[in-house]
Image (tube, rainbow, N blue to C red; front, top):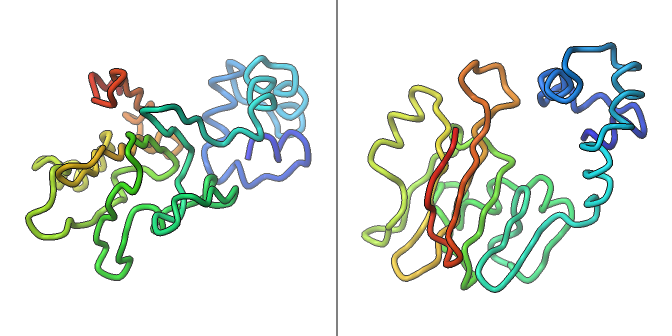
Length: 188
């Protein structure tokens, strides 16, 4: 969205936290025209331009991506889903909101959807994921790093804490993992 704003003047980004990001990157708010001109020369914008076509990073133990993929067809990495996936990535059954299994033999880390709006259930007696306190976090609109994991599988970590919204305590989640995919620490 930042790229479309700077390059084409598309203001969809302003519905998704642009003002807060502009203040963070440029030190204060600016008009849209002035912000477009100033952002173009920041190292942040240059970095995003350099990775524009790399919507995921994968190695032997991890897959990092912005949003997700169609969980029923993990071999397909559709650009639109890598940017926008939600339910088709989270759930095997979208009506019952049943969390899908991790189809890969690696830890998957995604953002895009604030975890405080993700709710689902596991197949009976198969879960090794959602912490007990998670329901309290939903009520309070805290957006912790969420682990979705069935026994015997690598975890899927959902990390977006909704920092683009107007919730004053939401500044982002930074998750630190070890080389085997275990979550070591979260900085919020």
